[in-house]
Amino acid sequence: MSQESAAKQNPAVDEIYHPSPDIVAQANVPDPERLREEAARDIQAYWAKRAEELEWYAPWEKVLDDSNKPFYQWFTGGKTNIVLNALDRHVRTWRRNKLALIWESEKGDLRTLSYHALNREVCKFANVLKSMGVVKGDRVTIYMPRIPETVIAMLATAKIGAIHSVVYGGFSVEALHGRIEDSESKVIITADGGNMNGKKVELKKIVDEALQRSGAPEHVVVVRHLGLDVMMEQGRDYWYHELMSLPLTRNPMRCETEVMDAEDPLFILYTSGTTGKPKAILHTHGGYSVGVHATLKDVFDLKEEDRWWCTADPGWITGHSYIVYAPLLAGATSFMYEGAPTYPYPDRWWSMIEKYGITIFYSTPTAIRGLMRFGTSWPNRHDLSSLRLLGSVGEPINPEAWRWFHKNIGKEKCPIMDTWWQTETGAFMIAPMPAMPLKPGSGTKPLPGITAEVVNEEGKPVKDGDEGFLVLKNPWPAMMRTIFKDPDRYVQTYWSKFKDFYFVGDSARRDKDGYFWIIGRVDDVIKVSGYRLGTAELESAFITHHAVAEAAVIGLPHEVKGVAIHAYLILKAGHEPGEELAEDIRKHIAHEMGPIAKPEKIEFVKTLPKTRSGKIMRRVLKARAQGMSEGDISTLEE
Ligand code: WTA
Image 1: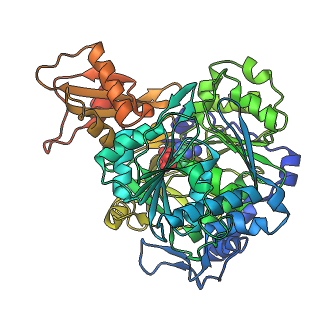
Image 2: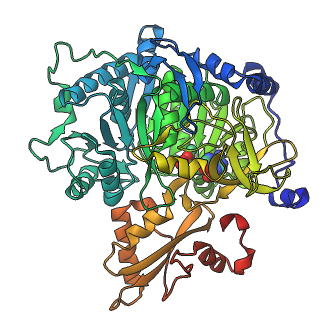
Image 3: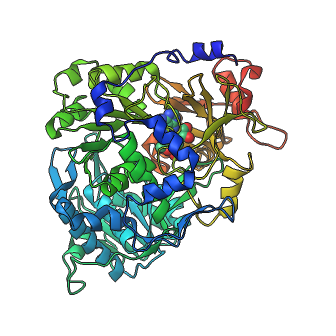
């Protein structure tokens, strides 16, 4: 594609927003280009310098060990634990009195935890886990609402060297079952339920049902959050508050942090891929700490006085990296909200920005587009002047939503950091820094130490302005290390299409100024409201409905969600298509996978387009649905 037509598709290619002089003057990185050049001269030296911003029990021997590609290792020989830097080093200083977490429930209850208090709760819960026999390397599944205990559970697991697997609380029975089973978790931590948009989601009930399908874990710990009546199986299920008040050790408020190798696993996080089985992306203590800490400081210019709010859920990578770990590593104050942005009114978020004096607000295009629909009177009734920076993640932000966010929330004085990254990358990869000029809809350039390129099928760089595959050319500390229990799939998925580059799975363009524009996924992943869902996993859920014989699922553009799910279903003999059946199937999907997986549209069909080997040609369905001839489809999708 020529630059001219690229400019047509990217109306904002020449729409530039310069930062104000005071933003540049106070930025942690006042000269981003210089830092990028410095890092490019010696990438390993750059990351070593960033690693020195953290404490280590013992220094590393080697910054990067690439002797067994693509199983890269970082800071080998180094001893650490992410909790050493997230809590232990802060409680030794004045920061013990600083708020680590401010939390508001959907009903409006407030809880705050200082670094001292958070550390105490983490130590107590770490002792609980130890008393249940959890040791270094064991897996612990965390299936929770957005409450402080989620953070406590994650940190306690990490502290004792176990591996957490957080499953998003919006997922349901089958999705949870598959993830518990694959991780072989010893303990599950959940709550009686959570508030969502005025409704109570009964999480413990979902756990009970999932466990009927899996080899049961040894123990289930239940946080009493809503006061619901739940089934407690004797000998298996325990109340969190009861365990936390037991004198399990001589001093339950103290617990040594386990000394870990830099390369020891910290967590696994399941994400959808091209097969029905979700992949457990594995991250480690050392490199991940270095990556998330450096990127938060540089991109969001984090200062001691800030009040940081990332609206994501801890159950997604955005929550892991930028609600829990990076802010704590940086000793920051993080705000967390339990519920829906429109409850009870569409100004809930704006009212909390005012109430808590939030200074940096990091959210998603879907949420912004959703709130935009309610008009400007909702944000306008609040004083949002505490804000100094905004952020966006999860899907491409359309220039219209960017401009609305910039004007009505940031009052034209807050730069928007559009951060491109993935579960696999652990930390921001392509993102602005506040001192850079911005273009609405572009994540700007690869961060210092990161090299990205747009290439064709042969792995050769395409011309500026042309569309191609996005690749990352050199390893980075926060990168995933492998797929848990499936190293071959790691190599196959990410390092086979192009031998020496990391294959991202997104298509992109780079413009004449070196700015990157992400177009979308080139694999079978659908990004619904920024949530990542796999077509294969969805299709398997559809065919567990008694009336469905075959299913094909595609993503089509949607005004608010970005992409919405359309399902094409072949019914079993004896079942008649109809709205009632469609509704029943929707309910079934919500029950099995979760409400986010509910299809926008269900179409009953007699046949599905297939290749000779029987593979469903989703590309053809997509073309038909969009009224294109099959030849119009981008070759990228073939
Ligand atoms: C998409 C979320 C455009 C992209 C952190 C990527 C984005 C996938 C952006 C990863 C962005 C994420 N602009 N697209 N700023 N951020 N994406 O693993 O397709 O849930 O590959 O991680 O989200 O999704 P994941």
